[in-house]
Amino acid sequence: MVSNESMRRIRWTDLPEDPAMLSGWQLPSLVLATLFFNFFFWYVPATTFPFIGSPILYLASLGTVIALVAVFFFLCPALAAHRTRKSLFQLAEASFGVVPAIGFRIGCVMLCMLWLAGTTGVLFNNVLRFVLQRSLTLVEVSLFLGLPVVFLFVTGLQNLRTSAKLAFFTNKLGAALLIAAALRVRPYLPDAWSDLGNTLPGSDIWTRIAEPLMVICPLALLAANFGTRTRSRKDVTFIGLFGLAIPMAATLFAVSLIQRAAYHWRSDLGGLANIALALWGGDSGHYQFQWIALAMVTLFGIARFCTRMWRAAVAPIMGSLRLRLAVLAATLILVVALSTSESMIITRGVEIAARVTGSIAAVLTADFILTRWRFARARRVDWLSLVSVGVGLIAGGPLTFWEGADYQYHLTASILLPYAASFVSRVIGLLVLLRVERRASVNTSKPAINDHFKTGQRSRTQDMKLF
Image 1: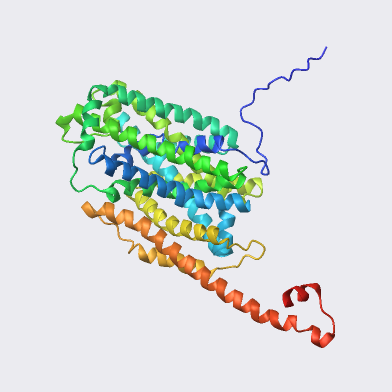
Image 2: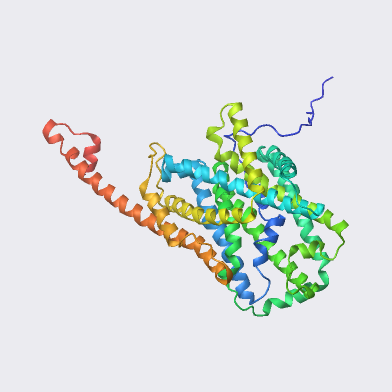
C-alpha cells in the first residue's frame, strides 16, 4: 500500500532556482542583513559612530545615513529593476551603452574581489598571526587563505533559498555576539546612556556618517539587483526596510552603545574602546581565540553576498564548464593575491568604488524618474550619461586621500557631491534632449499630415491629428 504523504528527501542544496520565478521580501532581506551583522561592520564603520553628543545630533546622523543608503543607493535602482524586469547590469547597459556597461561589470567584479580579500583575507591573516605569534610564509598564507575562499565560493554560489538559510545562521550568530558583548559590559551601560547628552567637540553629522557610507553604499547599489525578481513594489520597499534600514539602525545603535560602555569599563586604556574590547577584553589568550573564531564566522555572510553579486556580474561569460572553471580559478588567485597585499590598497579601492557608484546610482535614479530606457536599441556609448558621471567625479574633487581631521569631511563629500552633481546634470540633459526630440517629431509629422492633398487619401491617424 502506497502512502499519499510525500517523503522529504535530504540533499546538500536546494534545487536550482528558476530565473523566471519571483520571490518575496523575506529571503533577500535575510541575505542583505548580513552586511551589518558581521564583525567587520562593527569594528570599522560603526566605531566612527560614537554614542555621545546631542541626542538630536545622534538621531539625525542615524536617520541621514539610513535614508541615503536605503533610498538613494538601493530603493530607486531596485524599483527601476522591478519595473523593467531587468537586472542592474542591463539597466546600466540601457543608460550608459553597451561598452560602458562592460566596464561597469568589470568594476563590480573588482569590488567583490576587494571585499572578499578584505573580509576573509586580511582579517584571517591577522588572526593567524595573532594565534601563531609569528609571520607567515607565502605558502602558508596561500594555503590558509585559499581554503576559506574556496569554501565561501562553494557555499555562496547557491540559489536564493539556500543563501537565505546560511545568512539566517550568520545573522543569529552576529546577534548573539552583540548580546554577549552587552552582557559583559552591562554594569556600565547606564553610564554610556548618560553620555548621550554630553557634547563631543569636532563631531557632526558628516564625520559620523563618512565610513558607514563608504562601506555600505557600493554594496547597496549591488543589492538593487534583487529588485529584478520581486513580486511587487511593496516587496522592494520591504527589502529596503527589513534588509537595510532596520538592521543598519539596530547594529549602529547597539555597537555605539556597547563600545561606549566598554570605554567606561576600561578607562585606563585612554579611550581605545571598541567592540573587540567588549567581546574578549580582559580574557586570557586561551579564551580569546574562541571569541575571535566566532567573530570571523560572522564574516561569511557578507562574503557570500559578494560571491553572489560576482556571479551576477560575470553571468554573460559563464558559458561552457571550462570557461566557468577558468574564471573561477582566476578569481580565486586574485583574491588570495589581494589578501596578501597591504590593507591600504583595499581601503583605497573601496573609497574609489564609493565615489564611482554614487555617480552611477544618480544616473540610474534620474533615468528611473524620467523613464529613460531604450532596451530595444541600446547604444554602444551614451555620451550624455558618461558626461553626467564625469561631472559627478569632478565635483567630488581630485582623487587624493586626505588624512587627519579633514579626512571624514573629504570622504563624505567625495560620496555625496558626485551623486548630487551627476543627478542634476543627468536630469538637465534628459530634459533638454526630450525637448529637442519633441520639436523634431513635430517638424517631421507636418508633411505626413498634408500628404493626403497630394494623393487624395487620408488615413485614420491623419484624421485624428487634423482633428
